[in-house]
Image 1 (cartoon, rainbow, N blue to C red):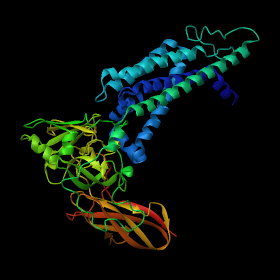
Image 2 (cartoon, rainbow, N blue to C red):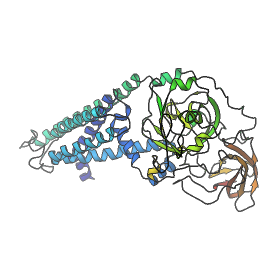
Image 3 (spheres, rainbow, N blue to C red):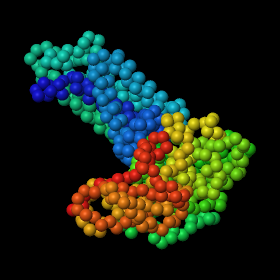
Image 4 (tube, rainbow, N blue to C red):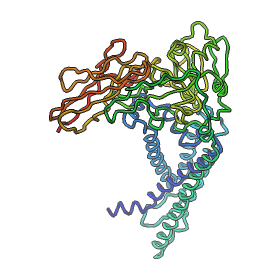
Length: 535
């Protein structure tokens, strides 16, 4: 214990702390200066986005299955731990061999700069915050390392190191007291520097928020009335079982899975959609063009391909937008085209079968969600909504480019990473109530949930208790074939542990498969099983 205590008081541990403080300065200075640039120019955002780009499918799937919509929080936490450990190592290296420490810091700075300049829509000039942060961090590291004490009780710093000529290294009985004073000076300097870094980072965030008026513009935007309003929602769409998800998902509760660590902030005056590729006429559409167009309104259920069996990465909302078939009618796709590659302003892309965007399913360029402009995190000002396809091949947020092409010629973001080119949504049923591992009283127990098979509809939902017979649940009213359908069942529950399984049959009569499949490459499948204890 005494050795451990001495280590933490020794120069190596203090050098590691110096590295951490220097790293904090790098990030803080870049955050402060980044307020005058795009958010994607800050190191954490750029590094995180680069990490996502190179994440293998199995790791991405694991992160979503484990953390759900908190996957980005988990990523930042992991990055924080990694940066801290690397900073500790660089601090110790700089203490032992200053030249190697400089090389290490410059290498990390180069990695950050490369991450920044390779982001979509980011120019070389926007690497300046990272460059300035790296230089500031290097100066702080030198300043702190020079303040590290060296005494006879600690390992002597080698010749040529940054601490070889410390003024604190003196002979005689006053050496220990001078070393203690030097320690206090070091911690004071480190503390003041860390506090200044915190203030700089906070100031950068506040300044960035003050300079951005996108949220205010979004809140003041008045959406036009649709030329074709959504059909009235019939009575009885909501399951009578308390605790089942609401039939219309509130915007604040709608799942969010995307690759954007920093939500793009787009001025509607600057937004433009380019439609090009294998078309007779290249066209460009502004946001005002959409406001002036004949818009349609439709309730559509969206589902993420990463949704596990029984997962909650699905939501139902009322969308307002312009039909994509009308956009393509103007552009006139050429013979041989079979895919539309949609691209977000942050570089994400999705491959959507051309025929799906030209049929009558009301695929749209959406500008509204549940009666208000799209929330920033859900694609403001414009996103795609395509019924019947998983989001990774259809629901591009912050969309700015549509290229009419062929599957044989172009690959989308996730297709390049091992996922399928086309993503029709599989039939799925989910138990919302009771939750897995719940304890319920014996007697009548209300069981309820949600099922979906967009564009085909749900014709039947059945539950099975343990290995008993399949029992047909009561279906709530169906609003349309492109929305989910809820269900309920009154179960005579006997005491003991039980497993409740659920399966759905779609509108074509096909029963949901019991074959378990992981989300990769084209969506999960299988029957959900919920374990409950009846008391």
